Length: 367
Image (cartoon, rainbow, N blue to C red; front, top):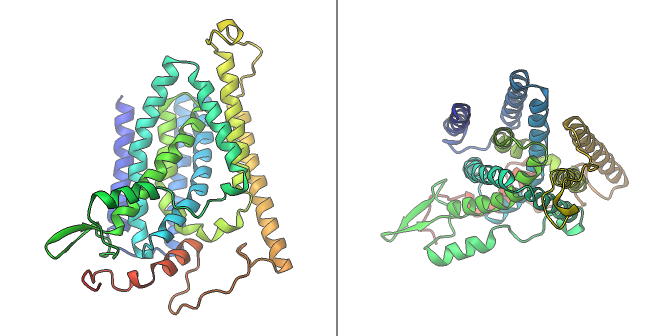
């Protein structure tokens, strides 16, 4: 229990540090700032994994790295959805850091609950491995479908719409404030609503990612730390690789392969510890293979390498043919905007979408 408390306190301390060091004063992070802090958080995860491996052994250490890499990969895919939400709500770029950090905090709370519930369920009922495996196979199938490349519908939109019916809201931003007072009445700003959308969306993501990591390890602490360290660098990753997101054209297919592999791994394990009376008479299925962590790491890393190389090759080939630009986007007439040119997709989309809202964030009576 003391290890859990120390780890939770360390994670909380990193979030507080992140807020006061980078997010408290609204600003758009530079590429250099994002790169440095992304490297810091990745290095922190590597150091933790090595120390953990030395203390508890290579098996659990390998499980942590497999879980961390899987969660980090899923986080990159989730950035597409975060970008869509930011663009839909026209969040000014300088305020996006706060939205992401609050989203990370909400995600850690919800995922910790899910992790503990998942551990209790797996310890109580071995058939839950079948359920988790089925969830991952279904998610993998959805990943490889053409429509899985993130539809135009904003995730969490229904929740936000319900929220707007229940409480008074305004359409104008008030800097990075969550509320604004107009005519003596307190209103929620879009800043609050976008945080609700991000939080609800991550709740949906957790339904996939938690079973995925439990397919690699049955240790709740390993699952927690893999999630925490992967999520802590998500804010920096959003601004760092926004311009690369459009180039990873095969990312969804690669994640589908990884999730399917882990799904089958879970089902094989469920067969190995089977207690369901209508399957093999309630007896363990001894011939079911148990896939080791070394094999899992090889498949996960190998798939990501193949996906990255194939995606960049296709992007360059399409750019050479003139069907896309160097970022993998179709050649379309770009809207004429004066001012700064956003170098990454995340910044560009949010800046263009923010439009007039970013110009007068404090002018709450302008409309």
